[in-house]
Length: 232
Image (cartoon, rainbow, N blue to C red; front, side, top):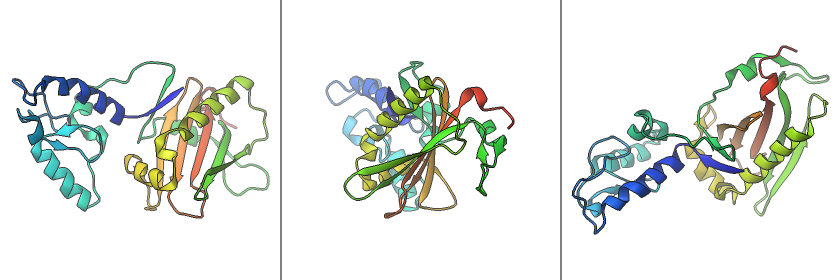
């Protein structure tokens, strides 16, 4: 299983192809800026290097990124012209899971129940969740199953594959790399907490990231797609 950040990976793949037009540093027919859609400069080095993806963008976008970065209000990658125009398409491969900034399975949180001896309600479709913290040297993880129900072996395998692939990403090398990675995540009312979402063939997944040191830093929640719309 491979996990990729959407749409960053697709933008970088598109730029890899566009850059071929600059065979000797100049392009007779420059490609469009992936960020705004305007033509790039004919000379490669005139274009700006994006702060949020390994691509080059036009001078105007480079300036806008710098100003937004200073104000801590970056333009989300999903708002880039290449994404909004439908120029980029996710690869429909079972082995690839995309991390996205917006939740596409809100129905999961509409059907909840309250486990015994607990005050917080949980989604009916929740199979399990992991809780991880980084101690400065490595990640430590514990697993929790609030419903007490046994998870089918095939779903356990899917959970393990996703969990292992996630923590192998460079973003999870240290807490600092995770903090930088959070600029691609959904923000919350707490400036130290962020969300990302994903899914596999049979699971919906919510990733809650917390950048505070000496705290739990990652909660990964796994929900059964087949039970997502069920009442308790």
